[in-house]
Image 1 (tube, rainbow, N blue to C red):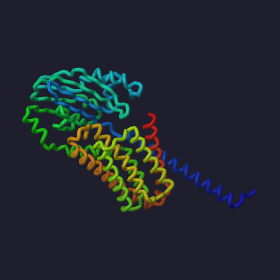
Image 2: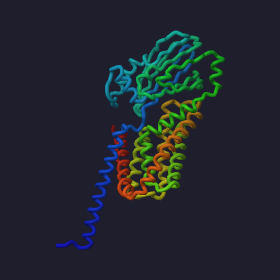
Image 3: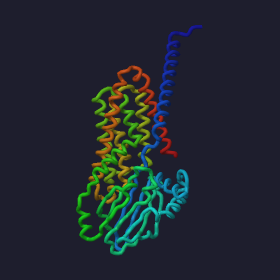
Image 4: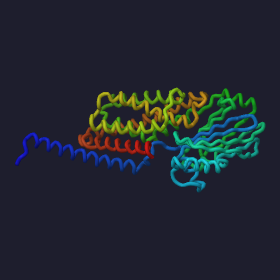
Amino acid sequence: MPLAPAANISRKFSLLFGCRARRWLLRGLLLLLFFCGFNPVFAHDPGLSSATLKLKPGHLEIELGFSLTDAEQILSHYHIAEGPIERNEMAAAAMALQKVAEQSLEVSVNDHVIDAGNPHCDFDAENRNANINLSFKADNPATLVVRSKWLALLPPGHRQFLSIQRADGVVLDERLLSANNDVVTIQCQPAETEQYATASHHTFADFLLMGVKHIWTGYDHLLFLFGLLIVTRNFSSSIKIITCFTIAHSLTLAVSTLSLVHISSRIVEPLIAVSIVYVGIENLFRGDDPKGRWLLTFAFGLIHGFGFASVLRELGVGANGKGIVVPLVSFNLGVELGQVVVAGLLLPVIWKLRTRPIFVRRWVPAGSVAVALLGAYWFIQRVWV
């Protein structure tokens, strides 16, 4: 018996939509596998650590901060532990790291190597960081030489932000160390100390490059930007989106680094993943160049700014209100520079491909599916793993 006209139309629409959805999903999965084949599925490059050195009467206090990923690699080097450190293992891992903490630094006072006393280590489960505290006896130091030995154990490109402070927290000097530049010499004469306190230190280029590197290795931020730009039709809509994203994350980067607002990374990182999922799904349902996208971009850009700020906080920038302007401005400019370079390379390719109807009809939805799936993966990883 033939179907009624209305039922026949409904059946054809269902079959068409079902086939199209399956094709979108298949292409999205293929793109997802392609991306994963060429890039590790990590949201941030674990390439930053911190060291705070305080000059106190008769001794030095040094606090080291490493990400959990870096701590795992250090323990693996000493054959103490292998694989990821779970929450219920953090206390034992802290004790293991404490046993080798004395090997993290080599400190010389007036040309004599001195040993660390009373090392202490603990893990910050909320921010997934390892904190190591070391104390060195130093009577009347004239010259201090500090070498960061663990930098050689960490991945190439790892940087350590060293802040040298007086006992009252006033910043005397700030440096960026690496495996190829792991030694710093400090002159402690009163005249030199006064010079350090008032000198202008040229770390602008270092933080600029750090900002560029962070956006280029921050695959979640890049994927969010890709999801926004893949449905833009012209230059004006692309500029509006990029500008709103830039203004928003610059605002929250500043207020977070200045400690005016603080949101835990355990909240921020899953929300960044949610923003990626939302953009991918919205592309599927609202199509090309959806209206009001600039407002959505601004709202999610505020969240991404807190993610950028976590980098500077982990380095101790702004911890005591000193030495904050140059790192904040130059890091933010580096993020913007890296973002502009990515957009400048990506947009001409997208606009060229959009002249082909098959790209708009098939591969834009497939790309949006891949964006949503990868965002969902990061959300699950950040909430439950």
